[in-house]
Amino acid sequence: MKVLVTVKRVIDPYVKVRVKSDGTGVETANIKMTMNPFCEIAVEQAVRMKEAGVVSEIVVLSIGPQQCQETLRTAMAMGADRGILVETGAAEVQPLAVAKLAKAVIDKEQPKLVITGKQAIDDDSNQTGQMLAALLGWPQATFISKIDVAGDGAEVTREVDGGLEKLTIKLPAVVTSDLRLNEPRYVTLPNIMKAKKKPLEVLKPEALGVDITPRLKTLKVEEPAKRSAGVKVGDVKELIAKLKNEARVI
Amino acid sequence: MGVLVVAEHEAGKLKPGVTNTITAATQLDGDVTVLVVGKQGADAAQAAAKVAGVKKVLVSEAPHYEGSAGENVAALVQGIAPQYTHVLAAASAYGKNIMPRVAALLDVQQISDITAVQDADTFVRPTYAGNAMATVQSSDKLKVITVRATAFDPAGEQAAAPVETLARGPDLGLSQFKGAELSKSERPELTAARIIVSGGRGMGSAENFKILETLADKLGAAVGASRAAVDSGFMPNEYQVGQTGKIVAPELYIAVGISGAIQHLAGMKDSKVIVAINKDAEAPIFSVANYWLVEDLFKAVPEITKELS
Image (cartoon, rainbow over all chains, first blue to last red; front, side, top):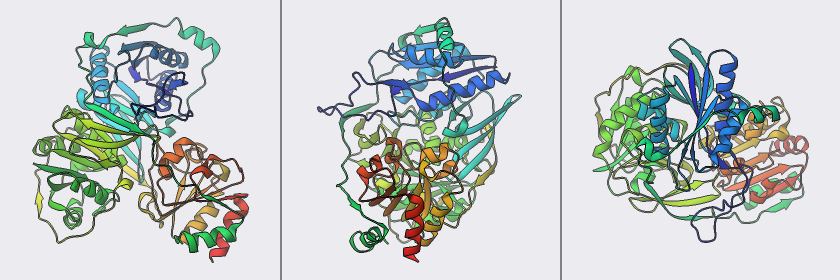
């Protein structure tokens, strides 16, 4: 079966982001970019399913500027077979538009399973997978930590607030990866070289007939309120005294 | 027109975060209606009717709403949403699963995890793990919103508002609930706890979390964990506090053996009082702590438990 995995290019999660002084957004110039960690988990899952003989082809899809080609190459170095970039240039593309573009690609590609990350660590929206499932009219299993495909369905385990939830879903379906689904592999140099030769198709949003005009206008971006400076305590006794008498929380 | 709140519940009780979401809803113009869907919904509906600010409660029960039932609940909400100006739910695993599906079905760009209501169209939401607070204005006619519960006070009580039965929506038959494995604990739920004792990679093993549990029991606290501790297999994911786990803001948060990665700080830095215990004097967690102690946690934690006895 064919699997389609979406990958997003984001600011490296270990970089401390800085809000621009004019309040229009965050600094992105000369900042290290990487594949969104949950998308890496999604790609890894597809590759493992291919290694297990469940999946025959892995298509990776990215939506964003031309540089997303690097992200797609990384996914192909991990084991994806080919890439598709919907090139949107510098325009901001919000989750609903991303889901519409992905749907247009999926209508053509007809995969049996779509795996997305549960959340991108830049805008923290946690929307695209669910929206995509809605637009396709497909089942959704969000925040999954396990998936077993069997025939025309799949058994999945979801991470919910109180623990785990088990579902069976019909295929085709959209699933979104949570942290414990797997641990993504490191890409090796020979695989990076091989990935350069894999096919990568570039599409334009207009060609897919999707209007990507943002519905949310960002009026301003600010740094969060800072916490006032704390104090170092010398030992446990002093700590407990402070908590009892100063903070009065115990 | 009015505001609809989709309420999560379990065993006939509203989940923590629902009353905070109702507070957010009352900051918008319009009567607040609460929708309760699923098993034992009638009991939860009675509870919702007594939350201050609620004008009406709708309850819909059907076997096809068992579990989180994202597709079926979204279809039900889609059917009634056009009668409202805003549809809100807490940004819990339940709300995060359902609401984007509702939004896409209605061709709406959802506004996730809001921390403030500025007016009917304008909201504040954290991005980049809470390091950039964005004020966004929606051009959609109907707004679909998830609410960061810790940013709003829980609503008080009132004399019960009327409860009405809502006809069940379609069973789409796309997925089937097969059961849940919920962690059983006598301790308070993480998102509702007044005190949280949280451990990180520095705990070293699952076994070592016992010393935190002993301290937590002494304080009547919940136990949490950093992503690093979850990644290392010390604790299950539902204990995770952080950008990609649970967002908490208790009165007291005690971070033990947690270095303070951006992703962890995102989940706890709005706690009222933060205590950090770490043997590394340079740990970034100290930058958000009210009180910090540079000491070996295996010495400090049992000593705190002993001092409190």
